[in-house]
Length: 283
Ligand code: HSE
Image (tube, rainbow, N blue to C red):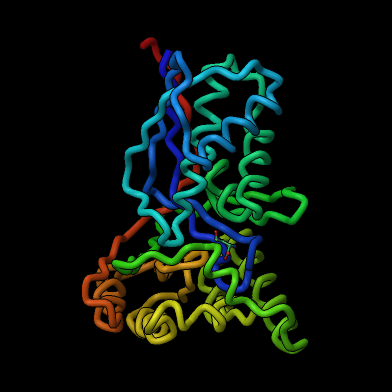
């Protein structure tokens, strides 16, 4: 049998919701898995995902080959590592007779990632609020929303982007970020998108990461001036995301003009409300 898992791209943090908020986009990677003997060697990321699956599923490990195709670029803050991990977890689970449910597979993926904010929306679609214990709440996104993604030509590795974060932050910054994160979650939950204006302002990570993404603040400001409700650094970057209900082309042009990286490209994405979709078919 061959198992394939289509996993949507995700944008995590959504401004002030560091390691907690995330949403799913209609770009996706598809991971295809088939059993193979003898077991082919695996790189560390797929090996860890397979190990986690066989342990949690109490299944005797089997060898497999896998491929990934799709339009989620690597190390751009769009959840590509989750497309690999969650895709493999779902693919192996399907091949093994589905010993684990979607919730358990999401939790395994979040553990492998170290934080749940990409894993939750990739698993379930929509907008998610996920906590350090991996409990989550999930809300549908209005199909009319558009996410304008400015994708630079360079990568930012999440590990590098976490190293630049401070050990402590000023109390006033924590208060502002907490208020904004609550406002973002409430507005998405109520589908009151105009209420998001001004709420994406973050003081936990974006100011410290800005030097890694030249022009970050100028790009967000240009997107807002062109009609976007607001914008944020997608995950740990390098993509900048702007949310709009109207004129996404105008917002995209404004982002490109404000971006110092001339080889950056823009993608206009719609929401994904399905999350991962797995298929099993005969070889
Ligand atoms: N919350 C994570 C971060 C997302 O910002 O480091 C990146 O995977």
